[in-house]
Amino acid sequence: MAAIITTKFRIHNAQSFKEGFDEAAASNIYLGIGRPQSWTNDNSPDTPKDTVSDELYYWDDMIALKRVQSSDVSLAIVRRNWTTGKYYDTYRHDYNGTTAGVNINDGGATTPATLADANYYVITDEYNVYKCINNRKNGIVVQSTSKPTGTTANALIGPLADGYVWKYMFTVSPADVLKFVSTDFVPVKTLLTNPGTTDAYYTQWLVQDAAVDGAIDHIVVNNQGTLYTTAPSVQIVGDGTGATATATIDAGTGKVISINMSAKGTGYTFATVTLTGGTTGVTATGSAIIAPKGGHGKDPVEELGGFYVMMNVRLEYDDGAGDFPVDNDYRRIMLVRDPFNFNTSVVATTSTMRAMRQLTVTGVSGTFQPDEIITGATSGAAGRIVRIWSESGTNYITYVQTRVENPQGKLFQNGEGIVGGTSTATATIGAISNPEVQADSGDVLYVENRRAINRALDQIEDIKIIVEM
Picture 1: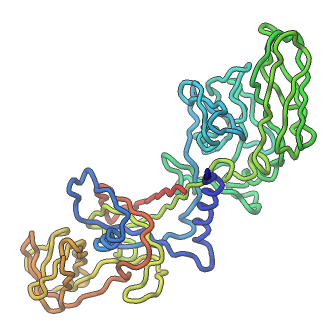
Picture 2: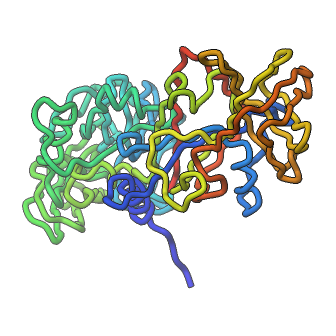
Picture 3: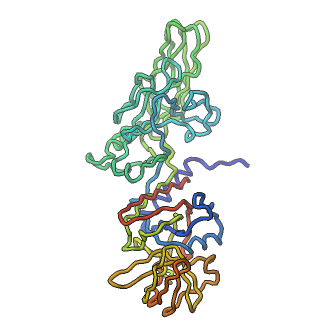
C-alpha cells in the first residue's frame, strides 16, 4: 500500500498546534531552562534522548519555567532572501519530482519533489515577501538582478528589467520582525478579517481581498517551436472561463519566446494550451500554471508552506521576581505541556515558576560557590547550588538535585548543617521552601541541549524555538 502525508496535513498540524494556545481549554505550554552543570565537553553538548527515563532526568536539573503565551507563537516559513544573481523557481502547481525547476546558484536543472522544495518566493530587505510568477527573459531562464519592490494588491509586478514577474504577498510588520524573524525563518499568517487601514498588515488584506479564484496568471513555454514567421494563436481550454493570451515570437530565431496573458479568467482548476498557425516547422507548446485555491495571495500560509511553528519567549532580567536566576548559566531548553503546581494535580497557569528548592541558611562561614555540590551533615543529601543571595539580612540558596549526584533521593533536613564540596563553606538550614512546579508532571515536548548560556541582571534573552510539522 502506497501513502503520503501531504503538505496540507503538515500545515493543519501547525495550525492546530498554534490554535491550541488560544482555545478556551488551551494547553498550557511552558518554556523551561535547566542544566547549570557542565557537559563532559562543554563545547559539544550531549545529544538529548527521547526515552521515558530521560524525560524524568530532564526534570532533575530544571531551573525555572515561563509560560508561552499565544502572542509568543506564529506560523513560519523558510526564509529565502532575495539576492541578486540567483536563479529563482517559478510558482507551479505541478512540481512532482519530474517537473523542471532551476538550481538557485547556477541555473542548472532541478526536479523539486513538491512545491515546498522549490525556491519560488523571496523576502527582501524591506521585509516584503514576493512569489515568483515568471523567471524567463526572451524564453530563457535568467538570473534575478532586479529586486522586486512595491506592494501592489491587484496586479503582478513586472516584467522587471531582468524579465522576472513577481506577486506581492505581504510585508512583515516591524513588531513581528523583532519578535519572529530569524536568520532562517519568517513569520506568516492568513488574515481572517480586515485589520483596518492603520494596521501593518492592511496591504496583505488588500492582496487577499483582490485574489481571483481560478485565474491563470502565467503560461510557461515548454517548447519554443521553429520557423515561426508570425505569432501563433493561443487557445486555452479548461473548466474556467475568460482566459485569453497572445504569443510573442523572436523574428531572428523564429521561435516563440513568451505567452502573455491578455485576460486571466476565473474558475480554472485545469486548462490546456494549444498554439496554432504561424509556422512551417515545429509547433510550440505551453502549459497553463494553475493558481492555488482562492488565487495568488489569498492564503499565504498554504501558498508558502507554513508548516513551521515559531515560539519566541523572552527572559527579561531576573524574570518572575528571581525565578530565573541571573548569576548562573544554563544549557538546556525545554517545552513542557500542562505541568502541575507543586504537590497537586492542578495544571499550572502562572506566568513563571521556580523549579528549584530553596534553603534559608544561617551561621554562614566561608563563601559558597555557584555550581558546587553541598552535602547535608545529617541527611547525607546532595544538591548543586544554582543561586546564592541575601535579602534584608537573610541568606538564601537555591539548588537542584539530580539522580546522578544524589542517587538515593535524599532530601535536606531543617536544622542540619551543610558544607560546600569545593569552597568548604558551612551553614545551618533554617527553612526549606518547595519548588512551585511538580517535578515529572506534564509532558516534555521538546528538548534542546546547548553550550552554556550566561545570564546577567541587565540582560534580555529572546529564545526562539522552531518546530517543523
